[in-house]
Length: 199
Image (cartoon, rainbow, N blue to C red; front, side):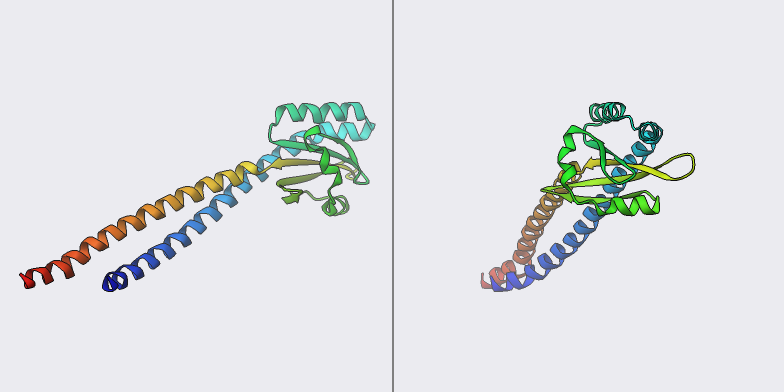
């Protein structure tokens, strides 16, 4: 039995380590790809809203702003939208993300000052979301406000959990197969010759 353990254990350790490393690399690659897709979608949505938000901010039209964010909410199931004025104060927000007002958003002042878009993962309460902020300029290229698209990323983590389950299942099946083959080889190499000699 000890000889069998010495024979099988190194093989199991090496195979487990290699598959775990490849699993981690695959999950990280998939995560980067999914987050990149979310970022690209959020950016294109924010850019498509730019003209409407510019009109709303220039006219200080709260009614149209609320209509815009509500229409956005019915169209985009996993997303939220916030319109900020030139001081970084919330002008209009989708109902789904009303709690977002409470969050400390230091990146808003940076986007207002630099006039550059910004995207990244944000933690809020027990959620992780992707936030993309696009500055809105008037005709004189002066920042008059911001539009922020908030994308729920729970589906990303559920996809990654499914991927981990598949990798773990494959690893278990492979280890059981290696164990079975090793026992068979051990029997052929060590046990049967001894039995023949004994006979």
